[in-house]
Image: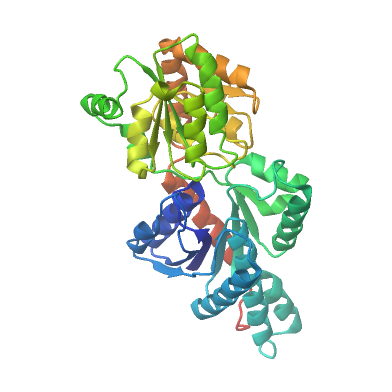
Length: 416
């Protein structure tokens, strides 16, 4: 199959890693794959270099950006139309809100034009079928929703209207968590039959394997962490709604009972300076290490060098850090949002706490800090839960099957 993926930017992030693993897996299976993306701007790192080494087609559209900008968006849409017309794909698979709207509109227009070009060569009934069931088949993955409770109602209404419009031009909507399907349908986006859940694949081996014990000791020394300290880690961009401020606030209460504790923040972003000020004002400089931006293999090392993952984002599809930590055999504490409960099974693989509940967050951390046997039991259960479900090869299997099923629905375009 000729497959085109479209995503806004290739920063270090869950949706981006998911998309790269899908492109790499499909290319390895002999499909003709092209990835269209915008520039990787900002402090979150980039995956463009990896994409460039993937062996499949890579197109960077400079005007395809995350922020809404009518002139740039119009330019990006025009470029998308030209590239799709030239590539003539069987499948167009979009990711993220901006790329999802522009990419699906361009793909649907291409399908309509292909159907119109067949008029005179096929019957009117066949031409009508081509307009709805022809190529390219249009697939969109919802990694996280653009509408959510933490922004204005006006903006949410705009996003919902756009997503409803795009869903009517989409053949399959893939969600990385059942919560995304439920929330989309509740907002009137799409129909139940359009949706399917495909868990976001990981390179599970690096998390299952883990570094040698001497390497773990070296990592702790490099970060100036006492050997006997309990280490809690949060892996997320230092950005709005990621919840780092709640971890810091809860830490004030934790250290009043447990002094030998260190928190790691892995990631970078626009809120770094503000978080550093909050840590200093709380008198917690000795208890926090801001590691900064690290490559994926380093994330695995840091998770293995830690004892507990704490994840306090207010909105996620299904945060990759949760299964990553569980694959490392580390229990997790998470705010009970979106898809978290699909892997954080309360008192089985970790603890769910209500969003913004500092008391509950501190209590959950204290419980795990004080009970190494409980940490081991929950972490091992999490590893068994995630071992097969999150393997990236399983994700590619599912997506390839979706594509094949969609192509089987296409009528013959030459009328034969």
